[in-house]
Length: 339
Ligand code: PLP
Ligand code: COI
Image (cartoon, rainbow, N blue to C red; front, side, top):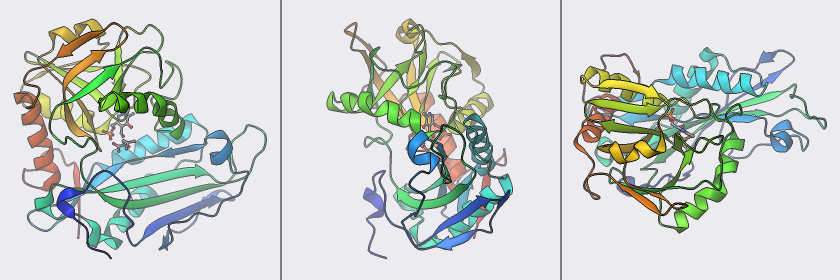
């Protein structure tokens, strides 16, 4: 293993030692296979390649001050992958197989879990693909489930510093009755062009509006949206956004802190009434948003100090990270300790 600069990790791929694989064929999943190869050999007519029959997950493992490694809410990721599979007619991965593969992937790659002091984490990427051949548009009869890991730093290079996001009506990521609520690759392919335009304009991400009316806030490219308005935690309810496990956790923590929760349609024009806004997700953790530019209407919305996260976002961030790294008591039973 070559030396890793733990303190300066970005969100990118670094090879670890092992990945786990299981194959679905003739009505059953195979025993988990430990692989050292980064390559996959699949049929050229596999449905994942032609018709986008694939879904993935993202979760993290954290090394604590006590040297223990904690995985955050992996059963929720198992459930969401099952939901994604169901949505595009793939074979579901049983929760037991999913959690076994995640735990084994961490155990076999312990050397890649970043040290506590670095503030980095081990990103775990489960992947489910239709690996059997079809030429007509129909579900595969064979599936491959893989779990690989890679050590990561912050998704947005600013880390816990506010970033700017961009609203544009020119691109949609997901349709109201489409696949936005599933973690399937097609949604991310659909977001790449707008994402590139945003990056070129100095924005960390696109903030998507609902694609039907362009009136309500949906979510950012790789993360959910939340806002603080007085004593309220406000987050969009929409059929085209991914049900974020981080957001679900922040809702619980906000409730514990005595905030009122509003999960509802959030009109874009309400942006001017928010005290703090942020993006949240496994990769993004909480990424505070300091400014949102509506580039079509040439309007800018600003939130607090452009260089410092707001007080409630900071409290939520510290609380979430505290539980993940084992600095705070895990009162909701969210972590699984490994090793
Ligand atoms: N929204 C999208 C589109 C995402 O890709 C992610 C990342 O998984 C999230 C939201 C955040 O979800 P989670 O908190 O479960 O990682
Ligand atoms: C995550 O937060 O885990 C994600 O999957 C976001 C992005 C890397 C797709």
